[in-house]
Image (cartoon, rainbow, N blue to C red; front, side):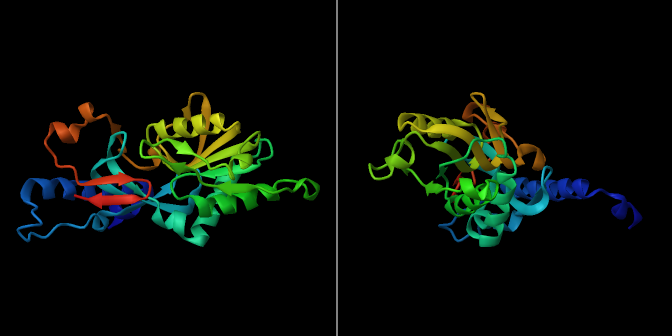
Length: 255
């Protein structure tokens, strides 16, 4: 009992995630999962573990599920579940406050472009940014979301284009794993004549993309052992560990 009390919160957190991960591996080794034959399929959410931010403490918790997952760009060993942070008014407001605190040196913003379902956070972020300006300098801040073609190309309709053209823009995202989505966003903003001033995201596994700093609340260091792999380098695939779900910033589809 005395030993448990002396263990740091960080160590206890790592121990919990190791147990969850080991449970995942045991399931793959000992259980044949077959929906058609009526076997019970473990629900991924039962492995969920919460983490805090090294940078912001317990301002908001982040949830992650260990396992073998596939994104559109890579294989990852955790699914970062941001559902509550993007959907809860209280959590979204806290996220916005944390992100705004990192944008104090940024020129006054005209537009926040929201990807990955971050519109609620974007609205609160606009309020937080307004607070940092003298009352005489308050102005409209547009909060918009691009449309995406089947090939992933982002675009705006003509009625929205004026909110980007020659405007100071923040690109707001939920998760950044490889930086590919950020580059697409940067290309879109450049195409429509906007001026990218900052990139903000809830979770990011990279510090910058093409020299642009990625402001975040959580990093890969907050999640012990977090890793992203190219398909050819994925250790799970090399060990013939089945893919458990297809994931993106909106959620997961269990296989």
